[in-house]
Picture 1: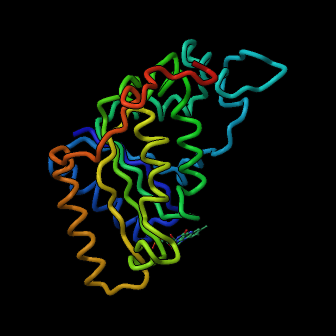
Picture 2: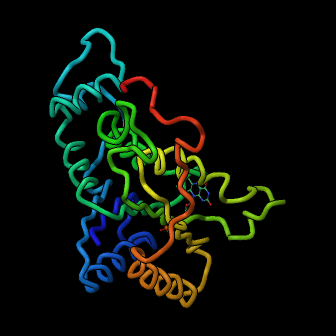
Picture 3: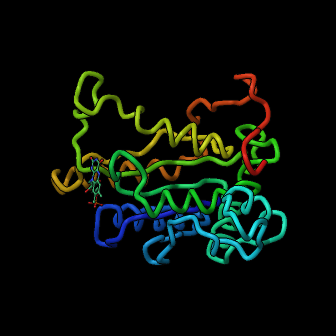
Length: 235
Ligand SMILES: Cc1cc2nc3c(=O)[nH]c(=O)nc-3n(C[C@H](O)[C@H](O)[C@H](O)COP(=O)(O)O)c2cc1C
């Protein structure tokens, strides 16, 4: 496997840091190629601005997707974005490793998605879902959270976990052509025993080595909804 891990935790000594270390060790020892994009270490910018491009479609009005589409055809992305795009193209498995923030991706990781998965690069020109340029790759959401598992039952305060994951699964991963694997979720790592944390790490290592043999979650195909072509701005 060629695995790109996009890591979005500011503290290397955190449980996220332990998951990252275990992943790099396990995958490398298993003969797989691993690249890590450590977003905090990179000081990766999360806002979408004109300085994301060296090309200019319209100097008077910043329509981000139009600039992305132009940059895609003219090699006009800023170097930090272009480097991440090269890594995404390189990988066959993408792992997003992060702590849950406000039921979602942390801002720095959401910014990575906003800036890297650009129109013209990841979708557009009529292409999305099963026709997206990156189609055929797989993605795994691996995340920790403060809450215990029982908060996410149907009739509890937070409701089913799928409710917060579906926007990422369908709106980012499938949209850009990635098949989503069953997420790896660590509940309340700060409130469990060392043994329980070790058990999570053991399960994590085991899962990583079999990622390419897993059956992905059902993929949302645009054609099944009578929506064959992407018709948004920048296409
Ligand atoms: C800004 C922010 C938002 C957070 N939002 C959530 C949340 O929505 N749900 C939750 O269960 N925990 C939330 N947390 C807690 C973290 O997810 C939790 O501390 C982390 O996953 C623990 O992993 P670590 O030990 O590797 O840091 C939040 C923490 C921060 C700093």
